[in-house]
Length: 621
Picture (tube, rainbow, N blue to C red):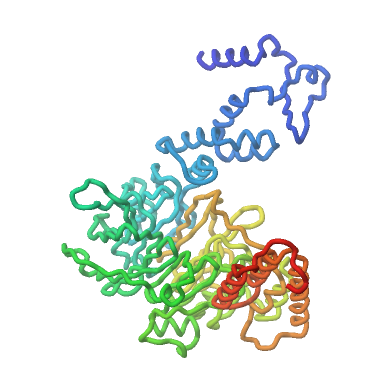
């Protein structure tokens, strides 16, 4: 009865009463034009959707699921404007997450919040047992999307986009040797205001006893006053019970955005990245954290920030004996604290100094690095063109180069389709150099999938890639023992497609001894956008140790230099020429330190009097 009365009121408001027979409603789009019925009677009585009040159309669209609202917005310009309003997404977001009341971050806060909560999910696939399918975990309803996750020995920790850290207790159980989710698992809010968290950097979750959480808290002001200031602190929790056992509070002037761990338990080094891109560190003895006592620890500036103060570190990743720093300009620097790991990374101990282990080592790469992954004795880099470079130990084929030869320099990885359904022990074997150089000169050849995520384990590597139809697939290489490469039990020396059904919005992954995890959460404001590969610069980036190039490669490079000189000459002002030169330096196959030098030199020249003078430049200038 209520719906019938509402329908009658709607008919009265729109003037449709008494004209039900022969009525036709048309869609009138400004770009597509009106769509009329074929018969004359329908053409006379047709009514445009645009005649309805915009508030009514938006209210109807707000009842659609997120997938249908996005699909309707792609039909025409009118429905795109209707389905893209913040009012529609605010009502959709309130229906998905009633607890979320205010959203003030981002360009499209309500649409971003609705998509985050619609696509959030944590999936896993157990390596052991007979069940070989992907399962979804029990999701915390209060979580505002999923930003990061970390599995430990018994539990899982999830950080959302509002800074709330969730503790999934007893999430995994073992039944007859098969790992599965416990349906009645409980989750609690471990802390709020969290920025980042970290645990033991080793791949084995057995070693992850403590959880270090970087939190924004309150610090008391001057004595005798009730005022407080926001400050950062590091809280240490036991992963087994979620109990806080230690807390470190920093001065309110220090603002951090990332935390990472390095070293052994007795000499655990906490690396803290500030908002300004500086690295600080302090040493903690984990074996004494459970003893109630209070002491003061001195923060020390890392040698990377001391020796290269002009560098601005954007992110860092670490394992037990090495740290990888990535700058905002796409440069990569290393700290290696173990001679064995140094030999695996670079193939020699010539430059290793055991007395100065914090000395940063620059990694030469021909383009800007977007993200990276660090394993125990190998690592991978993804540049701005979507190419994957691997370096380090290759005993099990974990570099994906098609062989088992170690690489002391970044090596470009190519992907090839499987020749048959029967996997071979070494996987498909690509030619070593000639085909790689041919592919570099022909960027239109689909020799790589532009990756979304990269993960390096103990002796295998995983890549999450996306096809042109936005479907995702999981590629892997290296050791396949224990089922860590589903579908390839004998492993593969090249990247091969794994038998895993990847969720549509998967964005990150992690692999342990028992399970493969994939995190699903789509953020509309942080999407990877790769550039088109300029062919001439890829020639030098493949095998820099080969020596002299072929004559045809030299001719192509010379043609590229002439082309870029003509582009610089076509710029009308000196400032435009400087910007074009900076862009060309970013494309050239130079070391990270060399690129930083050229960019800084160009900035100095541009800031000199008359260096950025507007107006057309003369031939003499």
